[in-house]
Image (tube, rainbow, N blue to C red):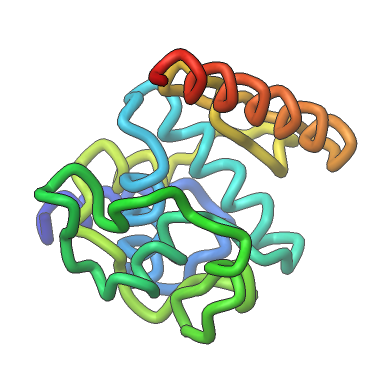
Length: 167
């Protein structure tokens, strides 16, 4: 990992809002946890870079899950939290809670893979600020809060339908 990080850092995109390799690793760890879809990694990294540049909170659920669990696995390895993230969880006091802090958390939330490291140092250039699950394992991206809120509403409908079909 150190070699991948060193190489990617040396070849990074100019003018990123990342001052150190450690910050790059922290961002890569968030990207790693946000998606398992390789084609989305650079897009998601681009969203976070856009938020960092704007001084916005990253508001990423995996950092809250890390804050709650301290990274320990639960639920027999099926998930670190073992339940759905709740609105009250977003209020936890922690330097890892990116709903309450602006910028990156103090350390990585996982050991990111090569692709997440590269994506974080070569993020996709776009105007997206938001993303939410799309119900297929991927995400839908948006440029405005109004657009994002519509996407969140759609995701909640999908989640309700999925929950009802499991009963």
